[in-house]
Image (cartoon, rainbow, N blue to C red; front, side, top):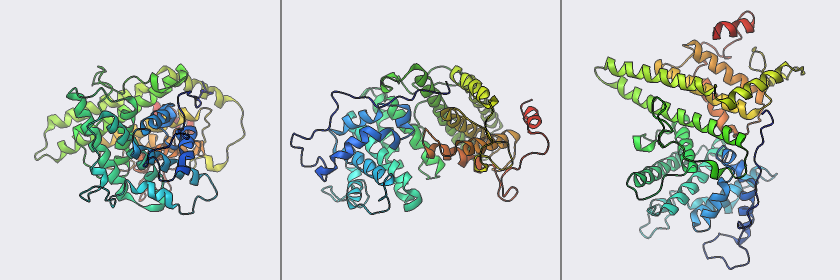
Length: 429
């Protein structure tokens, strides 16, 4: 288990880069950029983590869709070109061609006959076009997010999220009306990721019920539309890896339903006068989600992983360097970094739930403090080894930041006095 097999890229005899036939005029801005299409097929899973990590065939699906959709093809070139720059010695050199590919998605682009932003002129009534447009904007959103620390371009981030919300709302409405098939697990996963970006970066894009992906289960465990069948998107991945993908999707779905409850709490508590029955319903629903989050750790794949980690930690190993520890707390070692990354999300949901019961930030409850400390201990122990992507792991650290009040704890939560084992036993007892 600790050596979880991560599926490799697979050769598809029907998947190739057309180079001998004359391409259409709008195939690429520069035909020499065809090599970036190949780079996307080879390294795309790294470029679009966590989606590409948990769905090994996602890049192939995007590439095949791009052959009939120019905007997606240009987005693929852009993200592959950006990845190539970040992993080379010329990463800080300006690239006019990259800007040309991204210009298609710029609000200043006026390719339409009436001079409007071309992104508003894309017709998405065709399900294939709709999927291609969602893929394209998701790739551009990913580039914008990765470059955010350099560009500070929050406006573009917000614009892409708003556009994706509209696309998903339209697509889901077409499903309800019987005009298209159920959205694929890839689209559901992108939908949830876009929603998390909106919340984490406080972009302020308005949430409506239609802007949320359908839940995987209704309250009480009754199945709903969920994330759909995923096996076809895993290629030759093992059944064990499928179990890990499902475990990740269950956390995604739980997070989605918790965000819904946050919005419900805001509406209930802004009413004048507040309704005590609605408030009681909020608390009961929160307790149900707390139970589901706890039950997630009882999944077989998670229990086995925890057992293997306990065995691993009993083996002698040199003390890790200080940078892999959080303040004065004991360091923690992980054999399976994938398990550690999912634990980060699990503890982040614990903090999120505690903020429904008590919406005031800071170290106000014991469970909130313990979850924040565990997030920081785990994040420090990984030392940058984030198989699901660094931004996903940093999102958990953001939730921990809501707990460590800088006025009271400028250095975080200090190690509790006394024996740590006694503290843990007291905490869990």
